[in-house]
Length: 419
Length: 177
Image 1 (cartoon, rainbow over the protein chains, first blue to last red):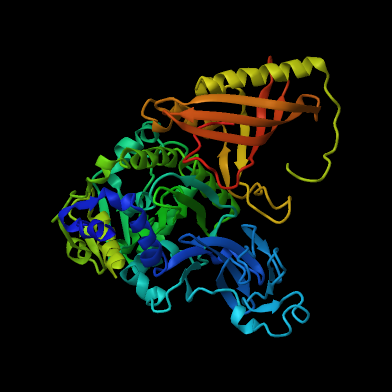
Image 2: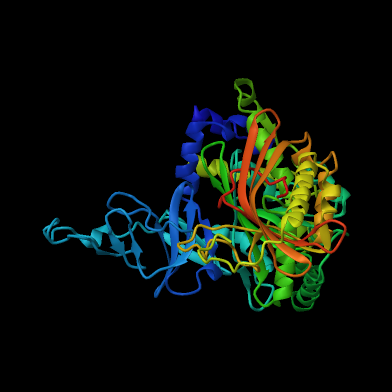
């Protein structure tokens, strides 16, 4: 059954079967093929600055703990090797060791088991502690402070995985000398929809802005959507959409942060040329499979769409700022992020409302037999370099409104799921 | 909020003030339940600080509520609250169109006089929301207001809202608290 569903994933003809968003077997295959092999986002280095700092996260449905040991960052399955209780139960904290609350097995920050109660009297010295360290991710690496990990030892390096998208990530994350950091605290909420719905939206769905977000446009929080910008995807299922002048420009509640972004754009234009400056701020995008971002003239956010069954998503969302910013500007960016995104954000609240209705409307027998339409701009795509005469990678839609990025996402998804 | 420490006690301001505060909160419940957000914004002073810090699972009570410079579900002044109220009043605001049915319960209250013209009110709240044909959300939390008492009726000058959930169980927040 899941083989038939996958066979009918046909982005090149503008169609993806609706069953892909509902089927249990497909979902289990996603956990194995997508989430246990891809590089997944765990958190930002600025959340674990000192030795002993940890945060808890998830990779697919597997809970993990990211901790800074004396040797650097390590990530482990957050489950004791004895009977599986969580060794870290807070979302964030500082510790000298990871101690299981069930029977007291204790691991050091490198995941090595060193404390087993009654090791002599109950285990007769026969327990091989070396073989019972916490289960560690196969690979862990960072790019501009963003920490990624994969369970797949055979996966390419993080830099190879990001591939052509690195150029664009550099423009988003390395445009200021001090790099980026996250504002403390995470927006966490749950939605009853399939994880691919928000992930593909952030790939570059400019089309929904005028209707989904009509009320926020009407009150001036952003200008009406124009036809001007770049909708770009690269190999690997990563994509972004960049609006001319920067996303979220509007007349209401404008802060000094917007002026700061303009200054950065002028500096990048002087240092790296006008073509690069066009990508400040870079816009909206998704790094395959489930890390999305929005870098706008008002704020910058990172978020992950953590799968929880075919009809569940746990969202975690952060506000990201340039580390060198004075605190007033960091606060301005944070307030603008909260005003527009996160569960109460004037934009995101309407997204959540509509995404959950997709799951409801299409979960019936008849609904599942149909396909979603991804035909917008089919056959109207060309290399970025050719379209703009600039040395940048990827493929761009001929028109700003296009589902070229969605198609790139599902093309890669199909390849990974078939593997 | 949510701390172990016993806060410093201030004097009870007496029955006349209690009556004024209860009347204000009754009025607020009526406005919020009816979706009369533009009128609701009129209950705040022009220098309102309206904030709902996020809550995290932490090993200590002190670490649970995000600090003032950290992330919040709301972090608004009068300008942005007004913008939110305008947006929510439009029929194209899908999250409240069709409108939710909502009930607010604010109780018990603790009222203290902290300045000659300012009182602090600490309360628990429960907001029940149901929308479309079966969606239901419950928001439990604690609220701490500073009310300014020098006008014809009290106005909210500062509000801190702490929702009890860490990961919210709703696809969005389309209510005010």
